[in-house]
Image (cartoon, rainbow, N blue to C red; front, side, top):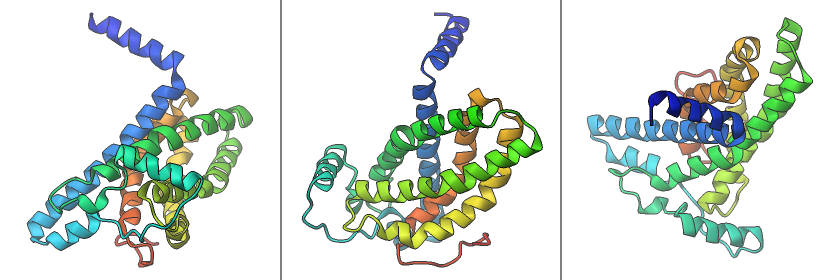
Length: 235
């Protein structure tokens, strides 16, 4: 098959299956960002000769499991089947593959489809690129979508990790994460709504998410009861 036919086939796939394409792209960038964070953490620890730091970054401080019913029992089976709750088996020298699988599922199955539908609605509701329209989109996106999206991230991760309390981490890290997201996403989304065509909206956000997810991964890796400001950040 020639390169031109491959490109045309890919273009046709994107047009026919935009939801699948955007979800896969978003999930890929999410997983890649976490992989890059783990790689950087491993390299830094080797240079410093500090395996305990790597062990802390690779292992989550989960609580003891409790008797589960309903959706929680289903989640336990789901986690065991996909190996999502095997963090304690990771050595300091290994990648945390369970964590990477969790980010893949979140990006492809949750955040990707949600953002695709959200931006279709947003572009249909607020049409144009005038300053007034862009600011409206910016406000709605940051203060209507972002808070529940952050909650979805922490709660879904806690469910896939098999935590005893699925809300503890969200309560502990929500304010810090939202403040940080405002500093990052408001200028990024301003350029998005002003310059990027609607069909490339999720792709643009996916690329921007590669940087953002590195911040989010750092916040995710902290113990749930830790509330210290991030280095290099005003939060």
